[in-house]
Image (cartoon, rainbow, N blue to C red; front, side, top):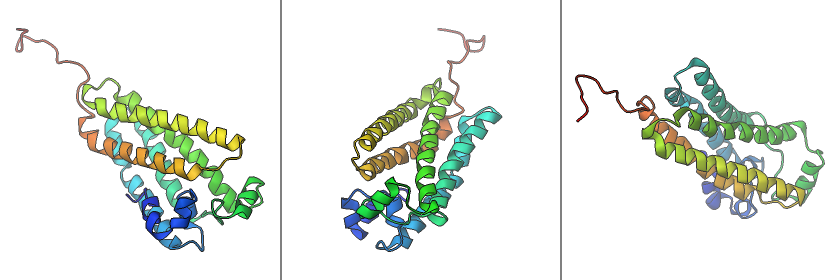
Length: 215
């Protein structure tokens, strides 16, 4: 719910919601309750960092744990840094001048860093369900988690393609796609935390022994 703070914006900042503003734009200085939205992002990032240990249950090898820790760490750290150290300076969804300046890189370096870092983070985050799927693909008790992971991956791929098409045609609707992605990712993240108790379940049927003969 913290990561889906755009739901709160429906009440607290309807103009930005209607214009398709991204969640980062809700924290632009001067926007209604912008400090609240920055605080929610920081809290969400902190929760992601605290939940990183839940993903270690899916990894049996140390380097697998490192990969999962890095990916979840990027998600948490970037969410915190974007709001705490590199907030957007203006909202391109609500200001034509801001959109033009953003397109020509005329905005400040912190704003540019935020945009580039956000895109990079989404690319890295897209790897997280892929890695988790590969780790649990042979576990019969994690079929639902595999399904949610594949659904999220498919959605991210379609989102990137659609966003690229819109960028080429100078059409802006990024905020709406981002909201759908956040919902999907939140469902996947919660599912990954909940299903971790099945991570150590054997992926093969038990061997037939003298104590357990086949009947």
